Each structure stands twice: as C-alpha cells, then as structure tokens.
Image (cartoon, rainbow, N blue to C red; front, side, top):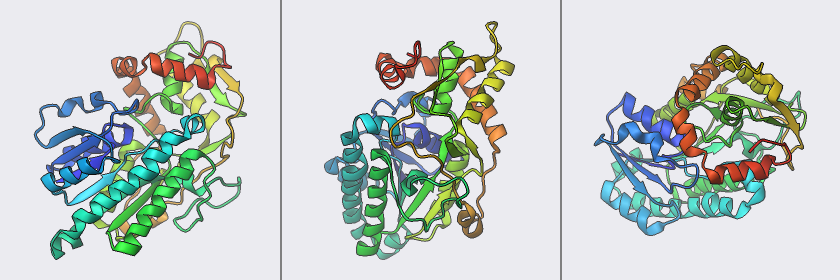
Length: 356
C-alpha cells in the first residue's frame, strides 16, 4: 500500500492512473479537492478496489495519523501543493498554509508513524516529496542548466513556499533520519492539466476563438516534461533512489513560450481547422507578470546516470498527444472551467479584451 497526497490534481492523478496500470499495489488517495483537484480525473478507477479515495488536507494531523494507522503504507508520495505562480502573486497565504505548514504537519505525522515501525519496515519505508525547478530561481541565457547542487533562489511566493517545503523535508532526513527522496521537475504538460497553465489555457482559448495571452515578449524559456514521463521517473526514484538524495527530472525540451503557443496553433490548424483562419491570429501580448523568471532548464543527467531513467517522449510527440487529448475530452474541459475559473482568468488577463 502507498499513500499519495494531492492525487486528484493534474500530476497526482496521472501518477495514480499510471501506477495502477503498471502494478497491482493499492493506493490511498488523499486530496483536499480545491479548485484544481478533480475526482473526474479518476473516473476510470471508480470500481477499482485497489484505489481508496479520501477527501482531506495534509495539514489535518488527526486525519493523517488515522490514515497511516489504518492503511500502514510502505511509502508516501507527496504531490499536495498550491502550484500556480500567478495565483501565488494574488494570494500568497494559501501557498504558505499548504506548502509550508501542510508539509510540516505531514512530516511530523509521518515521522511518528515511521518511528513505530519495525527495523526492517523503517529501512524499506520512503517519503517522496515532489517539487519544482522554480526553487532554483532564474537562469541567464547562456548559463548551465539547473543541477541538484544549484543554490535555491526562489523569486515568487509559490517558489519560495516550495523551497521552504524542500528544506523541511531535507531537515527531517538529516535530523530525524526519515528516509526521504526529493524530486525537482520542470514544466509538466499533458492530460488533465487545469487550464490556468499555459498549454491547456492556449488550447481552450483557441478552440473558443478567444485571445491567446502571452506575457511580455513571449521569450521566457522553460524545459517541458510530458506528465507520463514524470510519473515513470517518480516510480523509478521510489524504486531505487538513495534516501536523502535529490533528483532533477527534466524533458530535455528547452524552448520559449511563444514557440510553444505557435506549435499548439499549428497542431490545431491541422487537427481542428477554423474557417476564420489560422489560430495564430489570436496571439495577444499582455503586460508581463511581476518577477517573471526568464529561463528555467533542468540538467537531468544524475537520474539517468544513477537510476537509468530518461524521458520517452520528445516535445513533438508529447504535445501532439496532449492537444489530441483536449480535443477528445471537451466535456472534461467544460466541467472544470466553471464560473469561478472564468472570473479568475478575467482578473489575471482582463487587460486583454475578450479573454474571459
């Protein structure tokens, strides 16, 4: 049995779906079901006895202690986090509550549980904490990609809160001996991603004929990782990662945002052509967000060298699968883009007429 937190969200749901596809080990799925947590992501597991869903908060110590005592997991994978930079700028307190205090309370409950295990169970136990490359800050255009030894230099409330959670996890290993693993990933994309993030936002807006808002000059560079590759990397780290170690997970797909948007437009022109003309006509530049990091890039050689993992998807193959998934799952998109979502998009990009 494993316990997965935040497993109704984008990456967590993909991880649980992949996990139960490749093996039969049961999963306890804990998710608070905030706006980005969606049980519809897990519809195909409704009658699967290997999957137990519990609605709850990682900051609820009583609940965590009960779940640990009842299910006695051999590992915990912590995806639970507030994860959107733009939202963190408008409302940072939620990020401190979940990413910092929530992680602290989860660690304390897990530490007490782990201390009560037998010696062999303690040795086999793992706490895998899923984090982000944004904790490393920003890179100059010609700087080497982020390695696991880069100093932390977070520049947004979101990345600062994730950096704090990473430091807590590290400290609980070095102070208390808790066998932890940390992964820092680059930008994920793929099925079930909430359409506040760039790729699903662009797909959704384009299909509705709305402007495609691009911050600043669109030359912000990111490394892009297909979510199924991220899930396979996490499984590999859980299997063979050394306790206390950090593993950067990247897709080796470094490119500017404007190129991402133009690629999506070209795919939609091919797969769902619009009589009004090419989707690129909808590209609209908007004022850049405060403190916008210019470049992220992941050096993923350590995980390949030590654990034999590398991504299976190129960006070209992954983005085609992603666009096709959103075309095939219009009902899912309609269900998640509620009035509250439209209100938020209007607030964030409201300077761009017609975006919400």
